[in-house]
Image (cartoon, rainbow, N blue to C red; front, top):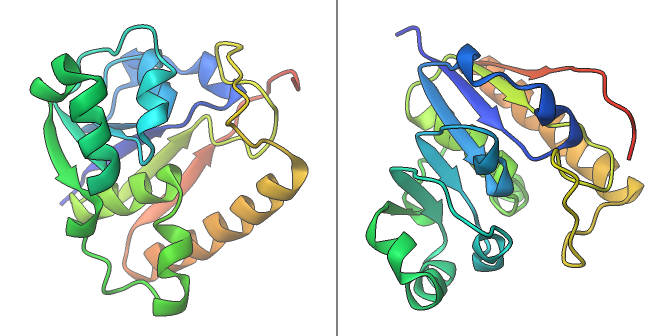
Length: 182
């Protein structure tokens, strides 16, 4: 199968993403859903949904069960129009047990695992900058911990996940774009 997935992350460089370059499968991470159409939204925390004034149309949502209950309560119109997939349904037997919680604790990594599970053999990550404080549209929020320590940790986890997927025949790459640091 030749399936290309675009993972949209809300980093500053996502501002340069052109929805015309749409892949076979597009998975948005958190607020990156605001950048263009997507087939899936991965939002592990319910408060992420509340960070958007308007939630664009998306067919599928992957989140945890507890956040899903909160989303159904706080955002019933949104919950009624998406198909929900609990994170626990991800096929993760191939992940090292000691790393599983780390990989499945961040929406970005869950999006990559989901793309691989859906059959992607090429995963292009847009807006995965591992730097900056603001989102692609200038948004920032007090609940978003964005500091050098986080970026160093996430970059290392990303490299580990890329290596694991490469061994499974799935190529994961960051689409590097030059952006002004914020």
